[in-house]
Length: 302
Image 1 (cartoon, rainbow, N blue to C red):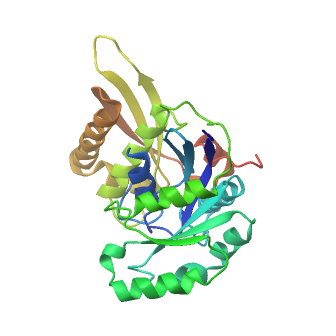
Image 2: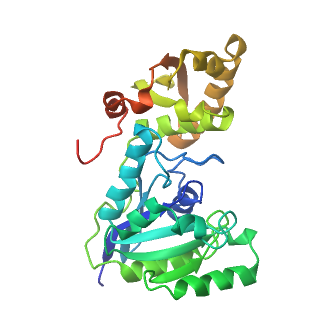
């Protein structure tokens, strides 16, 4: 039996359903999901293994016009992922971008797609929110374009038509032995996912600029035999004025944030934890290359 294996980048504009798609395909909640754009900041790897194939998905940040250094790094992750891939999945949200013009008129999307000759599949997401004639028109429109191997309508949230996506990917993958052990679903450690869960709760609880100005660092992570695991995390903000917003009156906001984060972390780790949260101010960290490096936003050039 021949084995196929390879890397598949999931790319698109912010909030089109990239993370939802990967989580649904893998069957685990690896990428955090909120209703705000730009939730994903780094490239997150998810591994789907069957008897005759292994697909390594790369969930990438949404393609946008970068306004500060962090967003430039996020865009670099997309270019790196595309360069490393055997197949690229391009996602359009047909609810907010019904004819795909927002996506394909974007100069950065064009640049990413032009980067190499990797085979591409176009996914029309959220078709559960669109009407059938519009979808068929869009399929015909993009099927005629030679730069996509296939055009597949899906609903990542509902899990609709995802078997066809897997079949289309496997068809395009090279014959290769499996890159990872069969029971492995990601290359990230527990610390990474704990920081992502806390960051997800910040996105859910706070409005406007606060989530985008926030980073999370794990100061301590101790596994204890006869007690709950101890996790101490720092929520980093850019301005002194943002600190009291995170804390809330008498610390109520951060207390609620900690409670919802702890519950989600325990669900993920399958064990009880004691979570301690602190707020630190790091002026303009999103535009500071040294701080970004310390926060793990490294690129191939560094």
